[in-house]
Image (tube, rainbow, N blue to C red; front, side):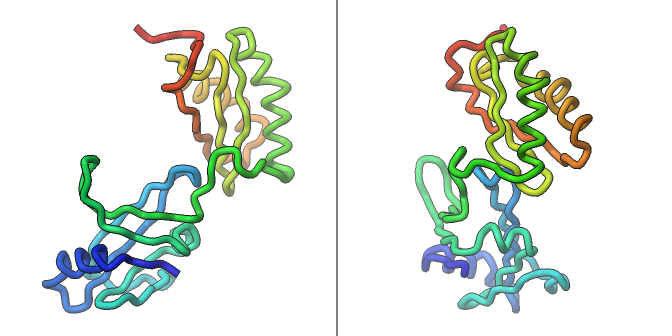
Amino acid sequence: MLTFTDRAREMILQFAEALDDPKIRIAVHGSPFAPQYEFALVDEEPAGEDRVVPMEGFKVLLDEGSAARIDGATVEWVENDRGTGFEVKNPNVRRLGEIAPAGELAERVRQVLEARVNPAVASHGGEITLVDIDGDTVYLELGGGCQGCGMARVTLKQGVEKMLKEAIPEIGGIVDVTDHASGANPYYVAS
């Protein structure tokens, strides 16, 4: 179930007042730790695979993947020093490291990290840890000298991603969820 606060509902109806059958499409993208929400007022019929959620005065259109990720959330309208717009309070957002990834793919990723990747980055005081797997997307956290390193993106794309995809071709994507700003001792600091 998706809920809109009274103020959020009022704003949607205000934006859609010229439409006969107002609909808002919501899509959820990005990491399960920090999802991004896309709101679009649409004047289209739902696609065959869309989930249609009737609300008071409008309908919400969701693709199946987004519907599962936003189920149980509350949409609010906020006006504060950070900006104005819709804000989603979503109980489905996981905290980093909350649940250890399990299963065959997780074990294979860990093996490659332990055998090939971490020995290579250890010479720079770094380490790379598997924090989650969502479908075919692998979420990694860089630590030690890799956290905050100016070359972390290059290391991830040209080294780690290449090694992992070579060993495990079914991996679709690799996402760095590291808070690089809090790195205390990066190996390389860009000038």
